Length: 331
Ligand SMILES: Cc1cc2nc3c(=O)[nH]c(=O)nc-3n(C[C@H](O)[C@H](O)[C@H](O)COP(=O)(O)OP(=O)(O)OC[C@H]3O[C@@H](n4cnc5c(N)ncnc54)[C@H](O)[C@@H]3O)c2cc1C
Ligand code: SF4
Image (cartoon, rainbow, N blue to C red; front, side, top):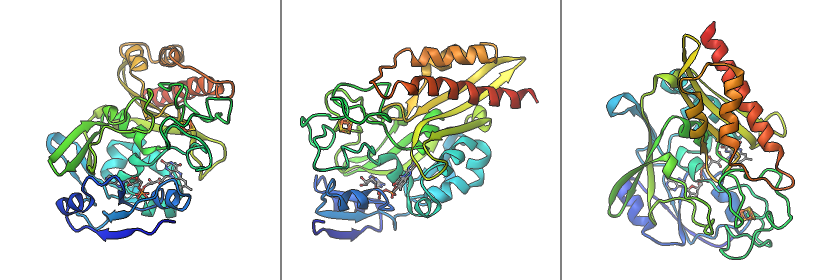
């Protein structure tokens, strides 16, 4: 591992100043992702700016009635927070479906949203990979291993998926990301936070260089109280998703009056399923319409030889989760 300078920041402006716009510096959250990548040589920072002493470790009421989640809140504290459990249960379920208890105790909200893909070529510095070294090629597209790769929003330059579970639930609930730069603070919806893959898969977010993620705001949403996260993985625990769904449903008189849907492990970012939501809103709350909603979203899917199963998987997952939620409303 390359030798690096380690600094601990005590306040937000100090952290931003310590990092500067140095492309060789990185913020350090829990380190559960970054340190692994440093050990494998994928990340070779000259300086780490530890953000865990910053006063960003609280979950507080936000203006307008939502919740403001600090970027250094641990995954464990986020999942356990009573306001999250009651008002956004799918978020608690999503966080608890990720990693292990030990990792969740260390991992932070900021680090989870900014973790990189788990594509095996990305983490192997002996392989070409457009995301790691722009223009070097994509073995996954060129006949390589791709069974857990993207079916939505990908390009011929990269078909990697984003690994976050938390991000899928946050995306369903219209979360807004807050950040700080040397030029001042900024905010943007999580749905606009990750860049389309296009021919620049090495550029992952719209964050300006040196930006420190400071918080995530969840707007109030009555429908979110009746929500669920379901994750499919290749073993029962301690594994990344091969497909996941965060859904919320409000039904009145057998008709869907509000629906939120986001899909995980299908794209380079948590995927807000707006086409499906349009089909659901105002439709009868039945499996037939839930399937039609899934089909509307998945009509844009593009598959490779070994990941076509994801289209069927996601269709079944959407129908199952929405049917469960509709059943609860009816009881
Ligand atoms: C074995 C294993 C299994 C896992 N399984 C899952 C899973 O199933 N689901 C899931 O969602 N995740 C999973 N994870 C990922 C884990 O949740 C992430 O490693 C973790 O969330 C990253 O958080 P961190 O605070 O440790 O980030 P770090 O490793 O500290 O940082 C990650 C990245 O974010 C940047 N960063 C951190 N904080 C900030 C900030 N405030 N502002 C700007 N940039 C910042 C860092 O510079 C770095 O680039 C797993 C990890 C491991 C090791
Ligand atoms: S899918 Fe993306 S991350 Fe994986 S090898 Fe191709 S370019 Fe790299």
